[in-house]
Structure formats: structure tokens, C-alpha cells
Length: 83
Image: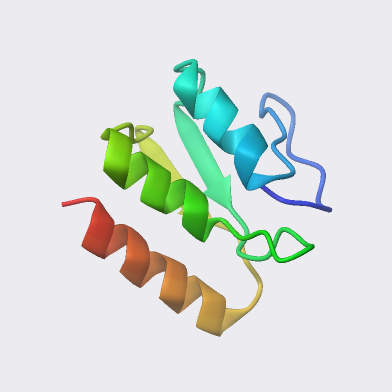
């Protein structure tokens, strides 16, 4: 998930939280790489909360955000939600 960085080969690109949730709903996500800020007030936090509420977690979650505060915040949220 990132609003601006093109994903590596073999990865699908979700630019919004709604796009990522759609992909998760269809069971198409095995690995998820997160940026925090997706623009226009959209963040990956809603995706993490959706995964918690629906019990749908990919096998691997990465964080590629360049802001260390956002990395810590996302890591903490994932740790709290995915027990």
C-alpha cells in the first residue's frame, strides 16, 4: 500500500485503504507492505483495524514507511491488533 511508490515486480498496488481492503476481502493478499500516509487523510490504520475486526491477516506484513515515528506507530498498532 502506497499512494506514490510503484511496487516491486510481482506485487499488486493498492493506493488507498479501500483498495487494500477490497483485495483482502477477496483473499488475494499473502504479503502486505505498508506506508502510513496515503494522501487526502487516508492512512493504513483503517486497513489494520479492518483486518482485526474481520480476522483476515496476510501471512507477512512489512512496513516500508520512511518516517520512523510512523513506523513505530504502525508496528505498535499491528502488535496490539494481531495477537
